[in-house]
Length: 176
Image (cartoon, rainbow, N blue to C red):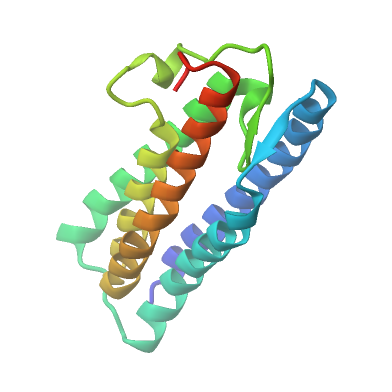
């Protein structure tokens, strides 16, 4: 495995830690304003899936001698970077309402600017997660990790979407 790829995965791990710091701060902000959390029981599975992605990105190329294939690796690096850009666009747009947990604050309307202005993509952060989970492993030909994450992410994302939409509808039936 290329040393630069290990650094890249490490940087993504540090980015995840930064997300968690922002999420904890935003959770306190939301709860102080009457925020209601939903779906906390599936949160550990979400965390495990993301930790597994990063571990797989490091372990598969090392143990299975996966090469860096420029024809695959460079486009996947661009996709992974674009996914990061979309993720942080979502975080910045939602501001203190963004969280890694499902928290809805009564009385606040749904955000409809930034990447949330596109009605055909009501949850753009999940697109970022799906693209990154596929692309980041393929930067270094870790196809088993890309496949495993993609397959396992489908039910987790479906559950999250159901949880978020149910929470939004509970506050305002027009919102979900």
